[in-house]
Image (cartoon, rainbow, N blue to C red; front, side):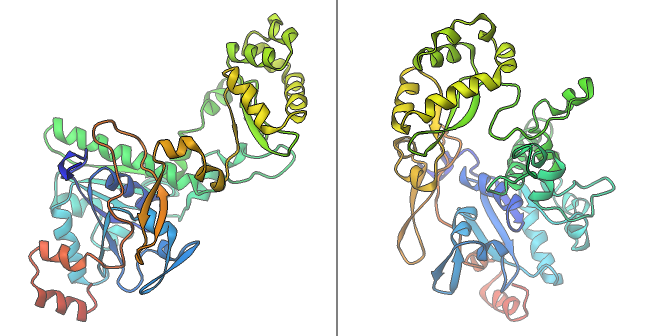
Length: 403
C-alpha cells in the first residue's frame, strides 16, 4: 500500500506527551498514516522508554512497551526550557494539523505553548489536551494519572467483589480510554475544519470524564431510583446469565447466555429442558430474579466437565463462551493469527518480535506498523533540516543544549 493511501496521510501531528494517554492518542493517528513528530527532552526522553521489561539496545536498554507505544513516530529532542527550543517548537506547530499534549494544565502556558499562543501561530490548529481533570474547574491544576481517573470516574468502585476492597484492571485502562476519546475528538475537529471554514479548536479530555462516559446506566439509575451500582464480582449486574465458571480441569471460562434465545439453547445443551421452557425465564427480568439458581446450575455443569468439552458444547449450541486468555493462549490462538493481531517486527538488533496488530481493520486503507519506537532524537536532524536549519546550525543547537 502506498503512503498516500493511508487515511491520515498528509496530516502532521506534534506530540508533547509522556507515558500513556497523550502518546497512545498520537500512536493511533500514526498507525493510520499521520506524520507524528514526538518531542522529547534531550538526554532523558519519555520515561516510558524505561518502564516494565527492558531490552538491550546499542545505547543501553529500552522498554519493549516503548517500541509499540511509539511505533511510526519520529523522535525529536528539544529543550523546551530554552528560548531557541520554544522557537523551534513554534515553527513545527506552524506546519502542524494537530498538537497532542498531556501535561498538567498550565504547564504548556508557562512554556509559551498554550492554546492561545499556538492558535495565534496556526489558526487551523487542532490541539488535543489530555489531563487528569480537564482544563477548567476547581481541580484542573491537580495532578491525575489513569488510576485517579478510574477511581473518580466510577470504574474502580464497581470493580471487584462486594466483600473486598475495589480492585484495578491489569492495565492503565483510564489512560487508554482517554487516548481513544482524544483521537476521536481530533478527527471530529479536523472534519469540522474541512467543511466549516478552516478554523481549528481545542479538544479537552479529562481522564475521569473519559472513564465516566463509559459507565453505562450508572447516572440515570441513581438519579431516578437512588440506586448505587456496587461490586458484583464476575457477574454482569442485572443481566443474567453472564459469569465466570471453573471447569473440572481447573480452567476459567466465560459464558454469556443473557440473550433470550441464547439462554434457551444453553439450557437445552446442558440437559435442562425444564429451565429452557420455564416461562419465567424467557426474559432477562425473570432470569435476573432467579440469578442465584441459574448460576448454580451452570456452575455445577461446568464443574463436571473439562474445558474442551464445555467449549465444544457451547460452540455447537451457538452460546458465546471463551477461555480467559493469557498471553501464551493468544500466541497460539487461530483467531488472533488469522486476523494478524500478532504482527512480526524487528528489534534494533534485527531480532524478530511480535507487536499487537492495528485496530480497527479498515478494508481499503488499513493501518500498519511502519517502524517501531525510535531511538531518542533519531529524527532530530532530518526534522530540523526540513525546517530550513543547515548542519552547522544544528551542530550549534546541539552544543548549546537546545536539542
